[in-house]
Image (cartoon, rainbow over the protein chains, first blue to last red):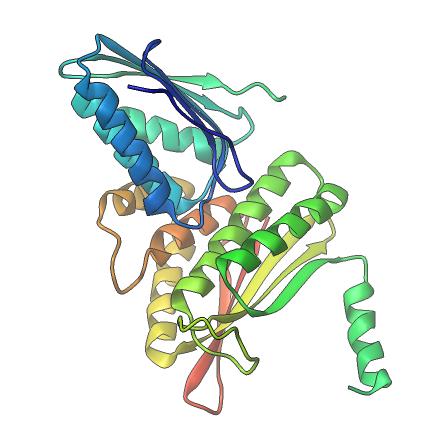
Amino acid sequence: MDSYVIDATSRTPAIKLDPEAGTLLIAGESYPEDVRSFFNELTAQITNYLATGPASFDVDIKLTYFNSSSARALMELLDQLEDAASSVVVNVNWYCDPDDDITREFAEDIALEVKGATLKILDLDAE
Amino acid sequence: MEFDRFFQFSQLLLKDEFVLSYSGYVSEDILEAVGDTLRQRLEDHARDVAQIRNVFSIFVELMQNIIRYGVDGPQPGPDTGEKPSFGIVMVAENGGTMDVIAGNFVSAEEAKGLSDKLAILGSSTPEELRELYRTKLREAPDEKSKGASLGLIEIARRSTLPLSWEVTDTHNGLSFFMIKATV
């Protein structure tokens, strides 16, 4: 499987899925014009990766902003990762701006429903 | 448009407290363009990064609500064949705090639905809003509400005061719904 790499746009995050390294990075902002289409593509790529029977999957989420539609899509993404955790070691690092309570609370609420995967909430460094 | 009318209009908009306003057809393209302008203006007007983030988030959610609720307005929109959405959004500074105000036409029925939802949000604590958001996230997007509820809850969470709103009847059977968020 090839790497899935897309550049960030003003409304969508950069995505870097590296099947060799077993890593996924989602970084930037997320308020796409078509949320479904953007995240369906990502979901499909993750499904492809998981189908290769990897041992592990390390996911870094570094989003400085995401709208409510993206929030729902992110929740579904975590559901997909949680499902995968029954056969793959899944580690999620969710980086949140220390000044943004709402985003942090969102990550914490998602974390409540994550049992098989490991989810850590970390500080996003200002760049 | 006579000059004296234009002058009065300009005097209003040229006051320091005006950060940005947009009126007319609202689409995702418009959201992006106006949003980019807003970001630049917020750099000058806002007191800190948190306020910029909260104002911008509220702006995006309000604009997307207008796009989804899409009711025609008096100004012409593009001939895309899609349901036209007309709205007015304004960001104004108010001695350190910022008001984000949006207005759009809705049916009387929708106005009632929105008022009911907002009344619940207005009487909820931050913890209750968080719980409401968490619950709403898990529900399938309600076809009728077109996801407005999740966005409204987010707007309420990012505001420092309870949301305020007003509905005014217009002559053609529609109501003009106005909502204000303060950060």
